[in-house]
Length: 405
Image (cartoon, rainbow, N blue to C red):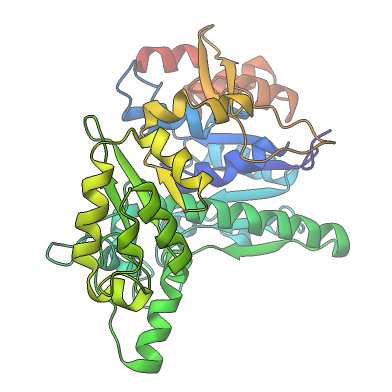
């Protein structure tokens, strides 16, 4: 029994942010029905570097989901969707606000079908305000949230975070909001209209810097890997190609320990380096000293050596390092998942464990894989009715999906 067993979610989301949220909910046991368009596949499928329909993003973010197709431009498809809403708990989408409005499928429309429905919208900038109809992917939100302005080197341009940071953040917030709404509904019987504006969520990550401006009039500038108060606080190149070690010294005692490890104990009492304030004033010189030592070190061995001395340090792990990391492997962080076509992928398990809940992950769907199953088993449609929907362009049957591969 998983925590959200018995909860059914209609997932209209695309790309990354929405699928992150619904993948979390699926890991927790919700029945997630992923609804794709019959005309154009989602971007996460089309960006595959492998066979069409098997992009890494799609495989990773759509685990534990059923997959159906509905062309909501067609009246029959909208009718089918409403029939599914009637027997579901949650509808989640991450379109711009005008999309569901144009379909006539906003919250106020859906509560007429299911008074207890929970709806979740994930627009880039929210449903109100001057920017409500603007669209954006994660890098645009990174820029508009202030995060890109803070990311990078002092003498260089703003940078986006290395991954879809905004999208993953929004997805986690959406999953949290859904779980709260489900709990609220169980207590009160009432549904909920939830809005998770992606920019709002990411701007919270720079709240301390906004407050600094409001209180002190300071605009924080890019500082690379340095900390405003302590030093050394940076990443240092190690032995090998593109190998790095992160070190964050918080106290004078940690600095003294680092000096001993570097076999330069005299630096711990050198007036240029002895105190945190002195090290911040002479941070370039501090970084040169640490970088000289780190250049001859293996990053993993150095990490363990420094940690043993009470010095915060971590190897900068590549994706190859993570895939073979002994700690991750010992924790069972990866799971072999058999896909619908019969091949096996090694996927990360959910990021949490629970003693009394099975949270093993299952595969994501092939394009339109479960359309007939859902329409037949959940709505009771006959084969003739399903064929008529396909003929009208309201759905795509699996064999038609194969023609698009």
